[in-house]
Length: 273
Image (cartoon, rainbow, N blue to C red):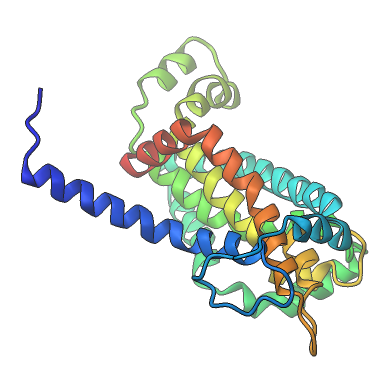
């Protein structure tokens, strides 16, 4: 049994302070979401007369039910496409040592260097010409293309450190490259796949600019765009904004707490790989 020393006490104090620092923004968010419109007290002061009516008003006025469904559809389809395309693309890039593989990898990495704002107008015109403006498919197409280079980078690095023993045994037993990848290699990519899923889910779920650009004026809105409807040029309903933000972040927090163990293992495995 380990002794309780001053070093243990110091570590516990640091952890408590760190937890308090991370929890402070959440406290401010919930505290402001419970206030009435006329309450002008400082954000850190606890609300004297809290009300839950803001949550019902935000849900009804912003149509958050439909917005959550749209965000879930966009996030789910985008992350699925990113995982499948990135894993399949990274496999030959990591295993083949020919010149074309290195050149292709460098070309894919250019996608990380160029800010997507440079291509914002051409992409908007392309989406418009395809007739996808105002639909969730425009976002799925955009996110799938935008996040694949970073995901290919993660998968390629992990695959290069992965032993080839099981894979070569499967090929000797008669497996084709695609079946060897699906049955032998991809299950070993579970840690880095968890990392890719987590990073892309957070990015797609919280993105505001792209849905505002592609879905503006459409009834198919995601959560950030639906909440933005409470902010106007002359008046803003901040209590509804904060209540909407709490509702919007709740699915991600619930998913995190339910999958906390797998998420931490995924990050640890991804970093190690």
